Image 1: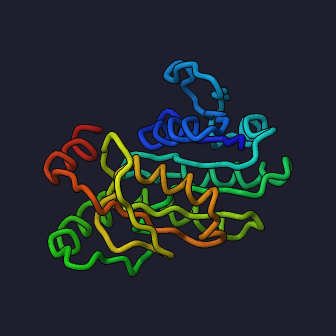
Image 2: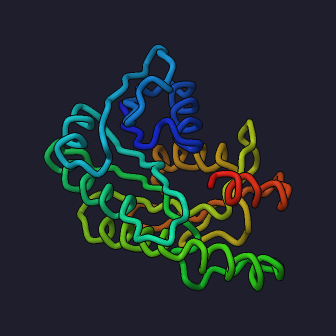
Length: 230
């Protein structure tokens, strides 16, 4: 299968690209920074801003499916990366007769998501980090989901919980709407997307993904994902 990967040079996109190539897929890595991706067999690079409809249209031609691992940083300002890219991608796909779309969203998009037994997360971290500091980001994630839901595409909204780095794929769990857990390794997120691409268990639905085998160090995670990135 020939797959277009948006956000291919991001932390999740790199896992997606590596795993897809290892599985024998051809990958069109869509990025604004082509120099950050090494040349490899099966990999083509398309330089495009994911919010530019014309650039997106040119990038996805000849592909069989689109996987979006785009992301943005927390900001007090209005964020439009998710919804604008979703509008450009879903507008271009029908012109190339591409039906399959998987887009990384967030468990926060499920307003009822509260991991079982995670008292500190549910009552301290989630209200402070996700619903206050990340408010504008998650507002745009929900707008992205709304854009995708109103299309006739075979879409899957992929909802990880708190993302962290782990070098290899581990045990993970998926569930419709959202999964009952606090953390998701990016390698597992990528693996779940590629598996869903083949199995089609969550077409026109949201798929929650959580990692069950390993957990991150909370202090290091907050530093790396929140403080250090700023």
